[in-house]
Image (cartoon, rainbow, N blue to C red; front, side, top):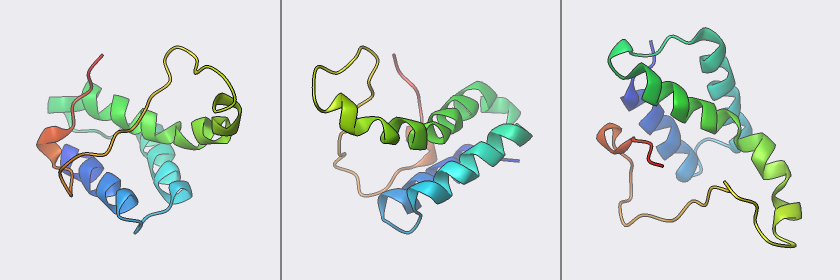
Length: 94
């Protein structure tokens, strides 16, 4: 079962260059196929893992987006003052 802490650890590993993009995307894709997420936070964990799984697809179109105006819905990652993510910080916002 995947819990919030698992997702936070994968993201931390990726942000600290211990886990490559292809590795975290493969993990997320496998997790989405299994859908074995903690039932107490199922929707939130599933949504975050799904977005990680789309990272490869999104990064392949980045060069095209940088030439002109960004389309609506483009997600921007901003650096945080925290050096690590915690499971409690994993929340999606609109």
